[in-house]
Length: 230
Image (cartoon, rainbow, N blue to C red; front, side, top):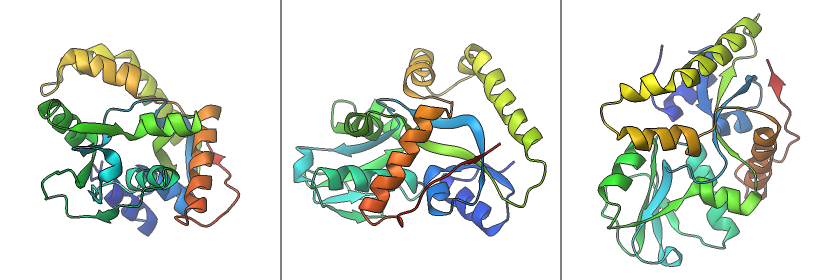
């Protein structure tokens, strides 16, 4: 089992060092040769809480945003959302500077949750899941289980992953009870309200919309997106 950060997993999958990975949805859009495990994703249909830009002042005054180097998908989503608002800040990958009225930072995952909870009164937080839903009215898909095309007999693998997802959701109270860092009531809200774990028709429409927006802003070539689901 490999627990590297999302961009590293994408690179390993692309190089053939992994046969299957829970990978960035942008990796699939960039190189749509993979089989996709159907009905499983990490998505949101509104505020996601854990993918945010932290800023001070007015968002229209931001001149630079430091990106989290661990995520391709969130960075591309941010570029699309800002372009739709006709904002054009500079982007950097340093993630070390102080947040000011003109400099913001993109946080993802547990790092975003920690920062929001520790600095709730100090900064504003621009939730990318919420902004996407306002713009498009569809879920946003952050990650998918992707299987390399040469893997044979992938259906049992996919079925096992769907079963594991169902088992974990059915056992969510025990998993929350074992959480030692975050408040348990917050975890219930986070897993029950902020995140979604399916990959149905609405999620597929949302991913199609993301592909179109990326193409429109020259982050991807224009192509007809199809899903080889298993």
